[in-house]
Length: 255
Image (cartoon, rainbow, N blue to C red; front, top):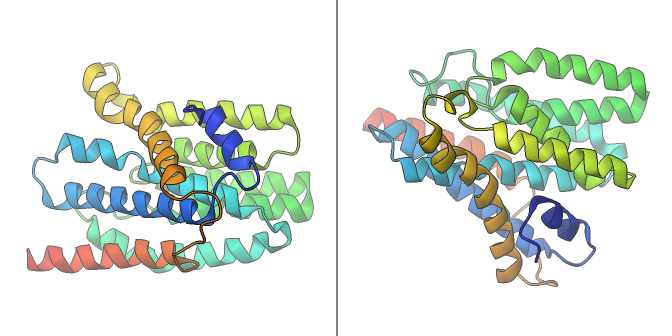
């Protein structure tokens, strides 16, 4: 397997190359990385750098799975967007309480990234260029409240880049999506500290963001060969995301 972002996206676009079980395994690894990262943030003082580094692969992996699935039935894009908006709103109070003292009260959870970009795709599908402009306005409104805890502009760029790279109708569009994806991954974590702490930023933020997702997908494909069926229920991510925050919030009260 080609261990690069373009090679990975090519493999994921090849029919039959990646089994449903492999995609579920990617979700499991992403969930474990996210859980470890949140435990590291909320319970360890000071946070453990290696746990932080491992957590950098969670958002890129979740974004990749979302990008591969979101446009399979474009006529259902608005249905998907509606579901993601609902889960994002349901999760927000739990998210705000769990990260009180770590993030400002107005910081939005990561589900708003997926809801916003899915909404852009739905509007573009239905209304063309006018819908694309309306969707871009929605994302523009979301950038500021997403910035403290959910990657802001870089996170939105990663989602749009990945969905373009995996679902673009022409090679040129796909290449543009790959470029945006790589640039977004490079700027996703710690870019503001690159000048003041270059070694730590590269070692614990930038490189893990680029390398760990590739490793996770490669291992998932090896562990779950073509033909293996999925083993996780549909929409499990939403339940797991909200549920783990609720459990962590309860544990914080008992800590």
